[in-house]
Structure formats: C-alpha cells, structure tokens
Image (tube, helix red, strand yellow):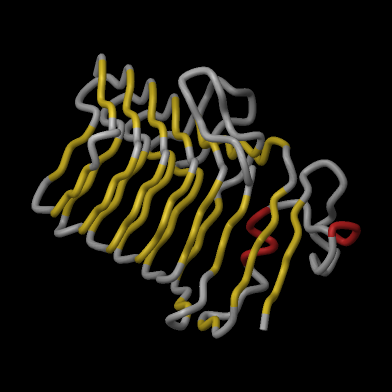
Length: 212
C-alpha cells in the first residue's frame, strides 16, 4: 500500500485531511502528526514550494523493512553554493533572529528519507538526528547558530547535501554514528567542515570541504 500526504504553506489548512493537494495541510508537522508510530507501507509527505516557519519533529517512528517514509520537498534541485531547493524550513520568523532550536529534529526513528529541503536560521542545528536511521538527499543547511547537520548514534546517509555559513561545523557526528557521505559539500562554516567523534565515516572522492 502507498499513502500520500500533502502540505502547502500558501493554500493549505491544518484542518484539512491532507490526502490530496486540494486538501493539503498548512504545516509539515500537521502532516507528520497523522502518522502512526509504526508504518508498514510506503508513505510520502509531499511539500509544496514555499517557506515553512516551524520546527518539524519526527520522533518514535518505525518503518518496516522494505518500506520508507519520505519527507519530499523539491524533487529535482541539487543544492549548490548559490542554489537552494524551493522548500525552506526556517528557524526564524524574520530571517534574522532564530526562535526555533532546529528546523528538522529526528529522534528514535528508522526508515526515513528527507529530500530537497533547505533549513536555515535555527538557534542550534539545522537538521539533527539521534538514534535514528535516515537518508538525506539534496538537502542544504545554512546560517544556523551551531551545526548545519548533526547526527548522534544512528545509521545515516547523506547524498548531495550542502552545508554553509554555520556557526560551528558543517556536519557533526558523534556517539558511534555510522555515516556514508556521497558528493557532499561544506563551505564557509566557522569551524571544521566535518567533525566526527567516536563515529565511523565513509566519504567518496566527490565530497568537498573548503574554506571552513
């Protein structure tokens, strides 16, 4: 079975059922809140282009093997230094002052795919995951107070992800995280492009960490 949920910051309403683009939720969290703790089919949350000023929490979601939960923003754009996906989650209400800790917070969850989202202006981390199994594709994190991407103890894959102008690290891994990075970039972060402590990290030759 397949379940599709829809979110649209411009035309949606959180009172809608979210089951079609014409009945889209307004916030990503409202769509996530429809999900059970255990998922035994393929689920996609389709996010329309726009700015989402919210914190998205995915906590305690377990997806059965051979299925996935996909949080789908921009389906095609590969982020670069000057190009962002057209779905943005912001930790700020004015694009200056952070008022939310993280843009995306994932905890104790498995089988998640996050694709085509840019996160910015969070007071701690742009995208943070702990004790989780996740795949991040074409995501970007910038202008956050600490790290662009943070992961602690989990199985993580990052493909074509971009981290820039964060207050500390571009990517930060700790507590025995197992991480695969393909074609990722960290640029102009205040400290290291990648910081890994007590973790296993596999990088391909196309990763680029510069001017950090």
